[in-house]
Picture 1 (cartoon, one colour):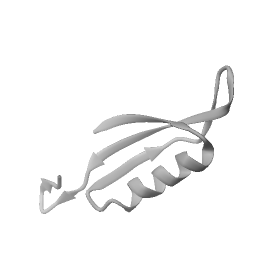
Picture 2: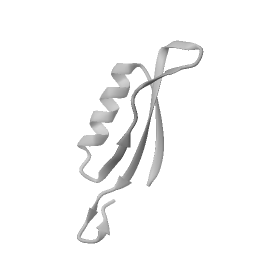
Picture 3: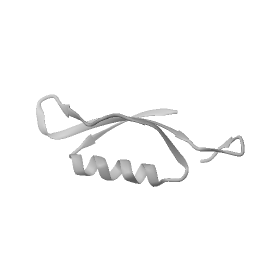
Picture 4: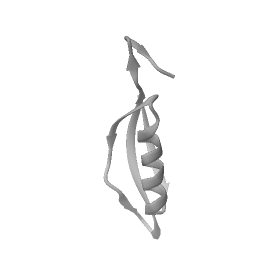
Length: 61
C-alpha cells in the first residue's frame, strides 16, 4: 500500500480520483475529504491509500 497526496484545483483533483478509481489494477482503500491549503485559496488537497488489487491470491500490477 502507498499513501498519496493529490494537490490542485478541485476539478482536477476530482478528475484524477475518478481516473484512479476506474483503473482495474488499483484498489483505493481510502480517500479523504478535500482540504484547504494553508496560504492558498486556489489549490486544495486530499489523501488516498492505494494498493494493487488482488486476483487469485496474487497482486495485479
